[in-house]
Length: 146
Image (cartoon, rainbow, N blue to C red; front, side, top):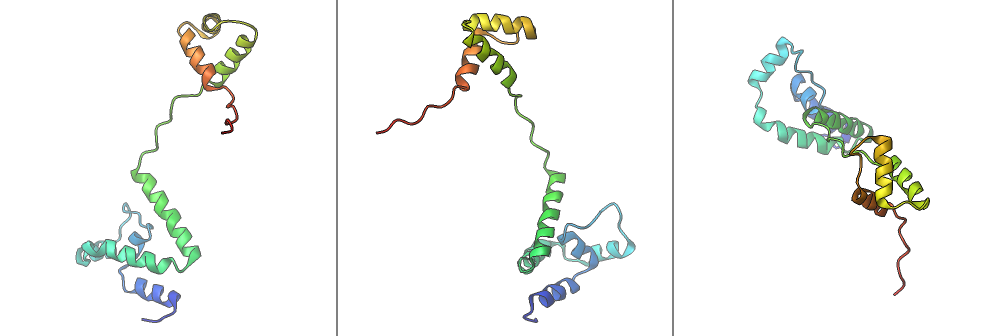
């Protein structure tokens, strides 16, 4: 093989069927296959595909622009197979802000909970939930010197 990285990559790709070049580059739409693609599928050793992909990646790393494009295509293809993460519980920043304001006005946790339940609907919060909500949002104190 030629020592020039660009030529080495081109020679490697030239020795592969078109469908395999597209597959290892995450550039193949399986819903649109041609007769040539179907014919290549029957004669190609699909067990060697992962080895070919690893070799292709080793060659591709030497070409930053193509490597970046390959990584983007890889990430996009993975999103097709991995469902997005479920969102977590919504934050209660608005409720905490109102509770902090009411606490500064001199109300107890029970009074704050009763007021917020009146405003936002019965069962919105409890005295203990308000205590935890406010304690979780206290500004952190500086560490003590030892």
